[in-house]
Picture 1 (cartoon, helix red, strand yellow):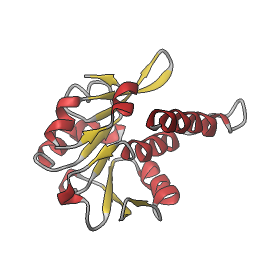
Picture 2 (cartoon, rainbow, N blue to C red; picture 1 turned 135 degrees about the vertical axis):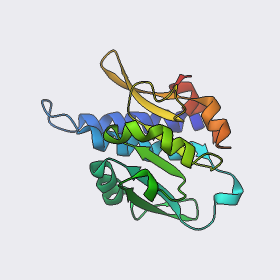
Picture 3 (cartoon, one colour; picture 1 turned 180 degrees about the vertical axis):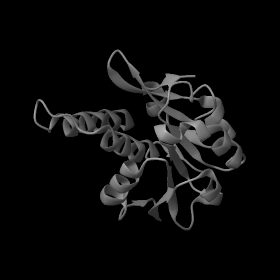
Length: 173
């Protein structure tokens, strides 16, 4: 049943992208926002962080931040309200369940990783090589198609559990 839901979800994502005019592609920040939100559905956080707000942090990509607020700012994850925060520097980063490090801030990824070490944070990046450097999920392009890498060691270090449906779609590192 869960596999069917995942397939329906993925077809829905593709349909949203295809719903634009044939010569017009959906902007990448919208695709990343949509995928980020859908990743959250297939990740479980420890019970110790499932109260209060569910915080999504964005470093270095105002378009992703704004899209997340517009599309998902009034949604919930379980019983938690989703709150989206924009961080302009690593120093500003506070506890969050998810952090998206945009391409422009990818040079700060090692600092982000160190700052969130020991936290239950799903790190999502968009720069070649960051999956191998410790990002939980990293967007990549393979054969002209958007894919994602999943670093299982980083997910385990953050004490997160990823569903087998998501793992089955990922490029495992």
